[in-house]
Structure formats: structure tokens, C-alpha cells
Image (cartoon, rainbow, N blue to C red):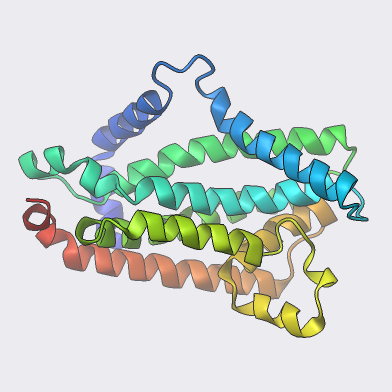
Length: 259
């Protein structure tokens, strides 16, 4: 972590340029541009909210906010990792020509993606105003929670970017895995509707803790319990530490593997 911070500070201008370039390329020749960042998940959200609240008749107060809070947490991780998986391979031309810290490439991808996610989170707060949800001090914990989502996503992105160099199927595998976790996590349904024995399975699902950490302040208006905080911080530390360790162990071989 100490080495990573030193490299990021030393090459902050290059990383800033990479972030700007990533954002420009993503919305190049797009009429709505940055708005697609919000429109895509919003459309998906509204379809799910219509299906489960009106057609299937989920009996929940403010189901749209319940769903939005869970989706915001899940998308922060899923979209970030899928985009950052190819960060090393996509920049192999620059990596082969210039001696720069390789970590700035996945980090730039992750930071660029979190610009989008912060915008989505602001839309969520507007939804809360529309549905007359209570605003209280518990919402302040969204700041450290977003940081934890960011660091957890960075750790996964570092691991994925390393494996993607050797195995290009990684991105497809991750896409299928994330799709499975979407339905295996209490995003579109509350965990309480399942039998107690099945609810215990969620305790082994890392997404459960991140989703619940968002739900407490946004939907319930409460600070997340200490268990949620503790497990979320633990998972973030383990994944980020493992990601950094693997990345720096393999970094010296990137140029040869990309040849």
C-alpha cells in the first residue's frame, strides 16, 4: 500500500490524463454523452420496480428506494471491475514503451468509473426527496461506505487485470459470475422473505454486506450495525491487500506477457 501511494503521487498528472481520456473515449460521438451513465441503470431500475411492485405485487413501502439502494451498491462493484479488467491489456502500447508504475492504469479506470457512480448516488438522493424519505445523520456514513466500495472494487480490479493478461476468458467469466450474484444477493428482494436456513447462506456472500451497508442509511434511515461495518471493512482489507500483493508480484512480468 505504501509503495502504491508513492507511485500514485509521483505520477498523479499522468493518471489524471488517463482518467480524462477514459471519460472522453467512453462518451465520444454519443449524443447524450454522460447522461447514459444515469439513464442505463435508471431504465433497468424502473423496469424492475414496475415488475416487482406492480405486477408481482411485492408488498413493501418505498420498494423503488429499497431496490435503488441495493442496485447502487452492486453496480459500484460490478461495473467497475468489468471495466478495469482490461486496463493493463488495453494500455499495453504505452506500457511497452514507457517505464511507468503499472498500477496507475487500473486505478485510473476505477476512479473514472466512480465518477459515474457518484452521479448515480446523487440521483438516488433525489429519488429519496421525491418519495419523501427521511434524511438524517445516518446518511453521512455513505462517505466512508463509498470509499470502502471503491477500495474493494480496486482490489478485485487488480486481481482481474492480472489474470486477464494470461487468460482472456476472465472478463466473460466475471460477467457471468456477477450476473449470478445479482440474483443470489438480496437486491430485488428482501432477505427476510426467504426461509431462515437460506438466509444464513447470505452470510457467505460478500455482496450481502456491501448491499446492506447502503440499505441501512438510505432505506431504513439507520447507521449500519457493527457487524456489517466489521465484515465490510475486513473484506475490503483482505481483497485490497491480496490484489496489491498479486499485482506487484506479477508486475515485472507484464511486458513479457504482453509481447
